Length: 162
Image (cartoon, rainbow, N blue to C red; front, side, top):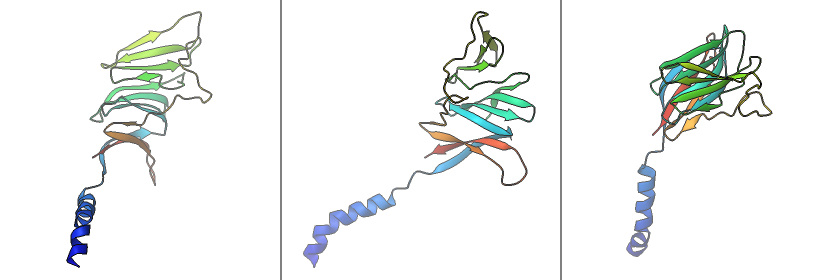
């Protein structure tokens, strides 16, 4: 009996150690609400994101930093966007459905620069769907779109994985 116990002791130790290690858990970090819909989230890789959504007043583009503060918040009145083309935490680029279509580049201070050419419409990367791909995660966490179960507005929330 002792021999059998000693023979399986290393296996028992491994099983106990593995079961004692905590599984990763998602922890709520922040949320930004006020949206009536969200079409796209693009992570910046540092805990912030850019959102293409809609407010009651129209489509919007929002830049949210890693603390959940809005660095850029633009309601697109009289126009719309086909998605966020590029976002790296330093520059946000999205197209406007103007005639001809143009691109808007936004820096970290929220300063907009128009990129346009009167002879061409600028779509960026055009896909079959009307919006560009979502990138709702980075190495430390992820973003979710949350809708209320009762009255209220949609929100974008950040969770870390630890």
